[in-house]
Image 1: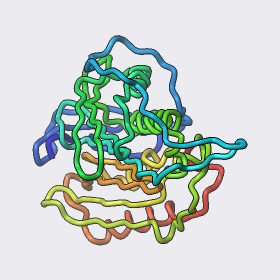
Image 2: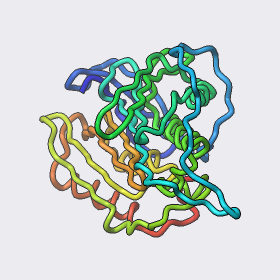
Image 3: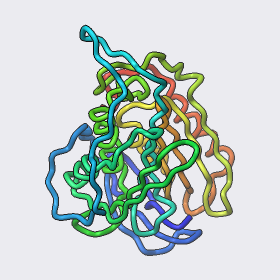
Length: 286
């Protein structure tokens, strides 16, 4: 992979390191740490100026009607998707947003990212059979470096989804977040046992590929990384996708610079399954 997340290990308040390489871990490192704070839905922190492509038309039209205080769809609603990619660009975190052909230019979303202390250094749009894909390359405004720490990545994800729910309320019952911040919760509840899938395969001698699919909820990205690092597994790089009610994570992981052996794979899988399948309680991240 072109970009790498840092070696991450230890407890919730531990110190973690990031390193970059083409196919292996090198010595260049940056450091970040987790804290047990709650994640804001719409952060208000102001940042310095950012580099933004000249884009207009911030809002797309909505295809829903409100009658007698109730919400009604006027047509089939596509599945919203938000992809956060730390692998494809060595200098920036790439975010992709898809919602059929309904998305506008997302100027409001880019402004909201600026309020997180981020710069949008590149933006582009492309079309395919699944609709219009809006992609942003994001860096930290204060350092110019890519975003890699899980808490900031989760803030970015929640900010984008909050804006999507605000300007496209018809997406509310298509997103798990609709139950928390939208005008209507999802029409169908996901069975967590059926929705949870975990697979670990070798990805060369020095790392393994961990694939996780689960019912989405606020704070899920941070929770997954915490569970992995609590058993001293290093997270090297990754991708986190939100597809409607489902979240899909792809992490390149290692243990002491090597791929995970089978017994350790079993420990990681069992730990994640236990956490993802247990009933939601007050200690879940929101």
